Image (cartoon, rainbow, N blue to C red):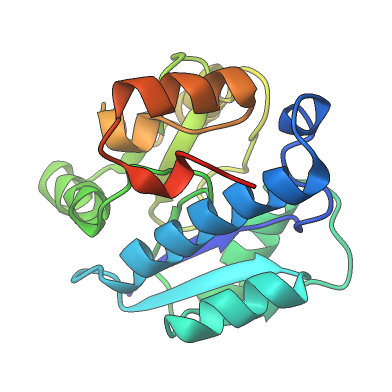
Length: 207
């Protein structure tokens, strides 16, 4: 069974780099719009058989409920990697054979991008890694089985994930996708996004 997991910290702590330049209220509005968009697109996937968010944030849970995304509620959060690996173990018990991790900060994500990952995994019989725009991060990762390697989200995660796949002699493929590769972490990212995507009105004015 193919499942999707969206890890989400909480609204009070998300995007620490953005908070240096924007107010907490502005930052949380941007985070909410991105998370809402991601969960809506995840819910449209035609290939995922169940979709989950792992979080302890009540507002995020309410958003997930609007789109029929199931909840894995955490007691405490150690790191994103720990959350994803914990969720993957839970989903294995629910019958998952593949788990796709999608972050909650992809403003251009489409369900078609999500299904393209599942299709590529089937065709190549491999795990899939989608790099960030910078080329050093991991913006999506599909593992088959879900615990074939551990997660290393954070600095230089792409290199770490590739090494782990190779150390485990696991079949993997790097899939470039500009919509998944673009995330927003700081004010510069947001301003670049506004300039390069002037027709996207969700992030034009936040007040």
